[in-house]
Every structure is written in structure tokens, then in C-alpha cells.
Amino acid sequence: MRTDANCIFCKIVAGEIPCFKLYEDDLTIAFMDINPGNEGHALVIPKEHWEDIYVIPSALLGATMQTVKKIAEAVNKTLSPYGMNLVQANGKGAAQSVFHFHMHVLPRAKDDELKLNWGLRPGDMDAIKGVHERVKKNILA
Image (tube, rainbow, N blue to C red; front, side, top):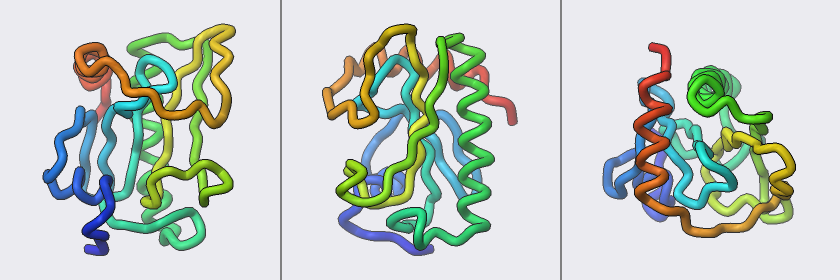
């Protein structure tokens, strides 16, 4: 499997760094974002290290998007947000902060004024864990 020893997401996949894991299959993993834009903000990544949309194999991109749909449906069912953004950034100019392909499942609140590049603010770990447990119960196998 393709990995990068310096990549935080590869370390999560390897179990070297803990996460609030929502879902995992042979090719992908989904977990809560610890710098959430809004409550319920989750990330979906392929287990293999691919830097961005330009290099990820199409089959793996498809598998990742299937997991994105599963997580988005679970977050939507759990939180009933006003809307949902699915965000994917490529390169520094797009504010990609981790160079391992990933999709943000980002619930929206009415008038939340969340900008596309929302910045990184550490979240409340207890609150993230609480949402993690609620969303995890709604993930369909």
C-alpha cells in the first residue's frame, strides 16, 4: 500500500494517531475533523496516500466517493443540517492543508457565515466525540 511516513492521515490509517473513526472498509476510512467548521464535520480519505485529485486512481476516487455518500447520509440523518457541503481542495492555493486526498463532509447551519477557507480552530474533543457516537450509529453498512 502506498504511504507517506510524514503524513498525518497515513499515521491515522496506520493507527499511530487516534481518531474518532466513523467508518472503515478495505479502501477508505472516515473520521471526525478535529478542527470542525461546524458540528458534525467529517473527513473521508483513501487508505493509500495520493496527494490530490490529479494523481489518485479513478477506481480509488470512486470508492472514496461511495464512502463520502455513506457518511453524508449518516450526518444528514443525525443532525438534519440546513445544508451540506462536500469540499475537496487541491494545492496550497486552494488551502489544502494535508497533502493526502481527502473530502470534507461539512454540515451547514442557516446563516453560519462559514467561508470556504474556514481556518483551523481546535474543537471541543468531548463535543466531537459526542457527535461521533451519534453519527456512527446512523452509518448504513
